[in-house]
Picture 1 (cartoon, rainbow, N blue to C red):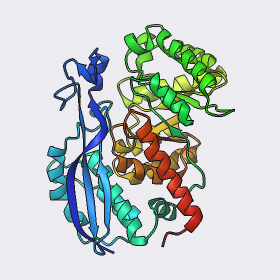
Picture 2 (picture 1 turned 135 degrees about the vertical axis):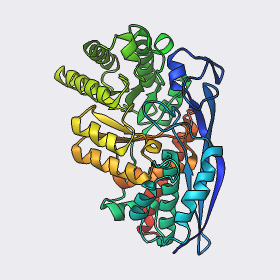
Picture 3 (picture 1 turned 90 degrees about the vertical axis):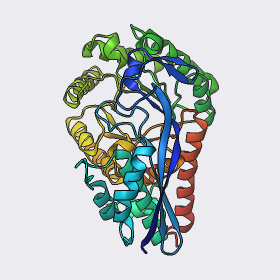
Picture 4 (picture 1 turned 90 degrees about the horizontal axis):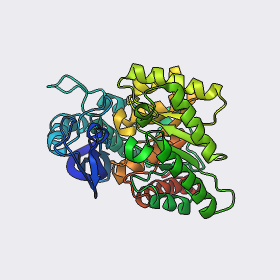
Amino acid sequence: MKIEKVICTRGVTGFFFDDQAAIREGAVLDGACYLGKPLTDGFTTVRQAGEAISVLLVLEDGQIAHGDCAAVQYSGAAGRDPLFLAEKYLPELEQYIAPHLMGRELTEFKTLAEELDNLIHPKTHKLFHTAVRYGVTGAVLDAVAKAQKKLMAQVIAAEYGTEVSKREIPVFTQSGDNRYENADKMILKGAAVLPHGLINNVKTKLGYRGEILAEYLKWLKERIDSRKPYPGYQPVLHLDLYGTPDEAFGRDNKKIAAYLESLAEIVYPLKLRIEGPVDRGSREEQVRALCELTELLDSGGSGTQIVADEWCNTLEDIKYFAQRRAGHMLQIKTPDLGGINNTIEAVLYCKKLGIGAYLGGTCNETERSSQICVHIAMATGPDQILAKPGMGVDEGYMIVKNEMQRIIALEKALGRID
């Protein structure tokens, strides 16, 4: 089976691009907008609409495969590729990527994905934008699956020597700034991991002594206890702090660790995961800080788990963090890794080293990229997967949960899909 035609079209994502640097410097949320001056290259406002590019591959038998190019909410931050605007990157796809796809035989995913992921831009002499590689390789996976009459998860499992999971992967839901009402939605739906919280400002969300977040966790634990959807419901609490404890506690790792231990005491017996407790401005400094924090928490007998995110962007980064045990769990932020072949490798590498694998991504993806990530999760078995796109809980949770259930049902009923 060959690719007969490549069609690219502009699309929108499930959220926004946000200028993280401007938000940290005090940009004020006004309704759905931020008031303030953008600080990151490419941004014309602190918040702007998320953009995507759909890559459609027409196969010679008339089937159409589909992947979406998308980038993370905080594009251009912490070493990531710049803002992904469709107007700029769609012509690159059509001019440089499409010719590599036309007429290609769809006998194997891995080889073709790695080739596309490593293509060098003829003008910049660098790899193509991570979002471009993400969407194109997603479309290729779908094309190979259609050519072989298999599920995408089955293609991955066959090529990487794994098995498709027969049970659900725990789904992690994120609240955005609406962390109270959205927490109720998560509890009602019985989400396995919640609420993310978007704690990205010290003054309004963490507190200069961490008191605002502590009060929120007291409320959240009481809410779970009083509104649990079934007896024995005990979700994992996962909060993303975006490095705000650095500002609150003067980059003192011992004080930060003590604070995180106090949060674990508040939510006990629920398990607590803290993502992004620090942001030290470079990969080396980030690894050094997370290693020390992890050791401090472990030596103190704390049940708190550290989740690495910032500066852990590429497959190389993930291997580097995992080898040094810079955190108990690593977020594999899918668009940042470029080709989805890298996401697959990242999950398997973390599992091999005994490091928690969080198949994440961003609220700023599309329904299609989210569905493809579910197939990756079901074939590789990470510890949790992000509900995406969007910050409204319902939509992202539905997309991820339903795709997972379809895979389980089809595998059970039919096995190989012929």
